Image 1 (cartoon, rainbow, N blue to C red):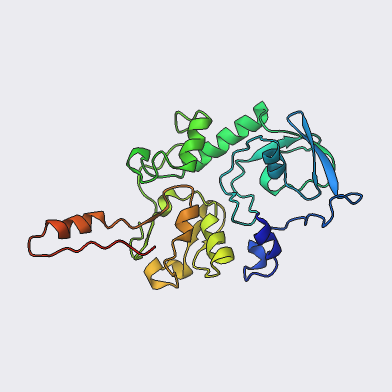
Image 2: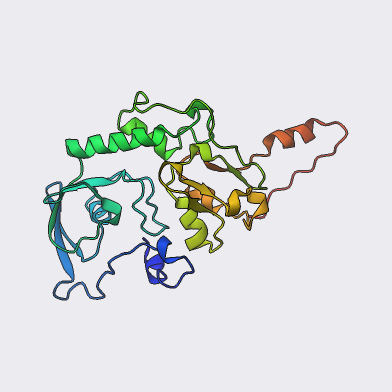
Length: 266
């Protein structure tokens, strides 16, 4: 979470359920108890108390893969791709949401961690409809990059053969395909926490969970302001900008129309 977001963490209009429950860093890290020691993959470092394992690893130059985490957004801990092994803990912990409040030893790439991440990615792909080569985010997709990194070469838990949701093309600016959604809720947090609009939210529970608008209406029928900020933070091709290229070429090729091209001021 950025410093600006930390300062405004309890001042925004987001509901309590959408706010990350973070341990605030001490104002004076030189005070007694202001810092805590953590050892990550054999590298020891002192960090301000309340720092997450993910942030501590970043300060050491150790990369931990994430999917739901984003520097602009509050802590979520949803995707579990960033799980690590903490000595003394029975289960793996989400590094993006684990505040360091006591000395701990962390392992980021043990066999247990690697296998857990691989299974998590396999499970995400089991609900992910579409072909990568025909997707607008091909070679620029975070899920695709993770699948390649962890050696996914077959669909361990199956793969949808037909779309589960209709594609929403009603918006002037946003093309919304929930068949490619991984439920990271980046769009939800962006719309609520940053833009303070609140068009999107996760509805239902368990395997029936999906990201939807009010009463599951098309984007054109809700209060979407067409800002496109959700597109900027979506890790897959679930949200993308409308592409009017075909319409533009159609008008250019029309001999009955005189086409004038003007660059946008932005």
